[in-house]
Each structure stands twice: as structure tokens, then as C-alpha cells.
Amino acid sequence: MRRESRSRVGGALRLGALLTLLPGVAAAGALEVAFNSSDRYGESFTFVADADDGTYVTVNLSVTNIGPGSRTGICRATVLRPGKPVWSPQTRVGGREWSYDAATDTLKVGTCSARVTDAGLSVEAALDGGKVALEYAKKPEPWSPEGSTIELGKDRYRHEVLVGSSPVKVTLQVPKAAEVSLTGGGYVDHSRSTIAPAKLAKRWVRFRALRGPQRAVVLAREGQEGDYAPVYLWEDKGQPQLLEAFTLAQTGQKERSAWRAEFTDREGKPALTVRSKTLLQRSAPVESLGVLSGLVKPMVGSPVTYLHRAVLERAGKPPVEGLMEVTVEGE
Image 1 (tube, rainbow, N blue to C red):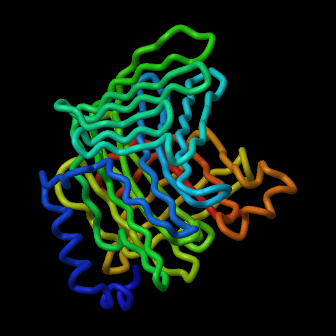
Image 2 (image 1 turned 120 degrees about the vertical axis):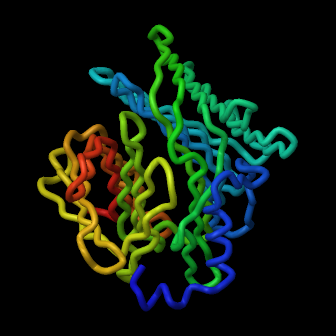
């Protein structure tokens, strides 16, 4: 966020951000869904695991009014295993088939669920004859740095990290394959929005180092009007470092793309670089609809997301290996 924009952030918002940054302060109901009747409402929990053998797994539980119907629940999973076909099942359910239980802090969406346990956080997704189970060793401790709330008129987007870094156990049962148990590092976040996705951002850059000696999270958004917020770096311990802005450069096209993001600090000085190495996946869900894409573009836009193995580099410090995710509006 630019300096002149930061000066307009209200006192109440600053206080809320400070409270969510206090270590060990976990809001009751970390997995609670706050349903909104807006046609643009969407709420999502994203669970990520980066296994030691290079397997990448995500489970996403969401509730939305966007698209046909309302109060729609969606569960989707993505499993990327080295040398194996991508497995990316999903299901959509009606409003009566998803629920939240405050007594146990459990969210259920069809045959998928997430719940806070005595030991941490448990996620299961049984889809298309297969199953993904994630067991996080840490409980949610939500935090949202300055800039994590975006307002456009009466509409609002808010993002929070629930688990910045945690050991995770992964159990995979891909259809027609034997069950596999893996270990690695995990991450969890939560977003809630009544801003149409097409208007929310021009591009996003995310970096997550979830295993190895150094853990780090970078989140950066460029708005449609050229504003930057949130933009920050979080490392395994301590408070997030707020950054000023970033530039994003692409070489090559589509599956041959490579990316380089340069970040500046609040003084406008170079802070860090994230550059891609190996492409894991290119996802363009609206583009894949072909002629039908025109029906949904006005609301959701045409986002394209690249997932790469990548490295974070800073002057005078060792490089940090992780995952880089770049989302751009159309190509």
C-alpha cells in the first residue's frame, strides 16, 4: 500500500490488526463461516501441504453465492506428485449439505471436513473414489497484518493466516493406487469477500517456504487501481515485515513462463526477490470454459495461476527454497 493510502487507515482497523498479531491469541471459532447474503459473497479456507518427497497437496473448502444458486458449498483438492498424473477432484453441494459446528470448531462441506483438534488441525476430503487427509501439528492462531482488509465502497475483502507454518502428516488415497503416507510442512489461510473477484486484484504473488531449515510466507496483492496491499514477509518467528510494493516480470508464455518478483521495503529500498524455478501447474479455470467463459467473466474475471518451485533471495542472507504462486488477471 502506498504511503498516502496508509495514512487513511482508520484507528479501529489498526487496533484490530494489532490484536490479531499478538502471539498465541486465537479467536474462538477459527473455522467459522460468516455467511453473507450478497451475490458477490465468497468465503474460503485453503489448506496446503508440501511433502518432503516433493508432493504438493491443497484442499479448499468454500461457501459462495457466486454462480448458479446461493449458499453453495465447494470442496476441491489438488494433488501433484512427481512423475504422476494430476489428481484434482471437486464437488459442489447445496446449502443444506454444508455446516459449521461451533462446539467442536468443525466445518463440513459435503464429504469433506476440517476441525480443530486437541493436537492441531485435521482435514479430510473424500472425493471421486479417493481421499486426502492432512494432520497439522499446530492449532490455528489467526493473524492479519496491516492491509489485509480491502474496502471498495460498501464491499469488503479480508484475509487472515490461520497457520503460517506447521509440520503436517499427509495421507493420500488416489483412485486405483495404493494409500501413501507422507510428512512435510503445511500452511492454512482464510479469506472472506463481498468484492467481485474481477475487481479485487490485478495480480497476486504468494511464496511459501514450508519445509527445510527456514520457513517463510510472502503475500502481495496489486489492486486494479495500482495500489499495493497487503504486501508482507513473515518468517517462522516474530512479526510480519510490512513491505511497500512489488514489480512482476514474466518471460516466456503459458507453460514456458518464468516469473521474477522484486519487492521494496517501506523506505522504497530493495527488500527481496522471489524467482520461479520449475513449473508445477498452470491453472486457468475460466479460460478452459471456452465460449462459455463470457458468462462468468464479468463477475469472476479470467484469473490464471502459475505454481512453481521457487527461491526467495535477500542480500547478505542464504536463499530460501519454497513455492511461488502467481495469479494474473487474464493473459
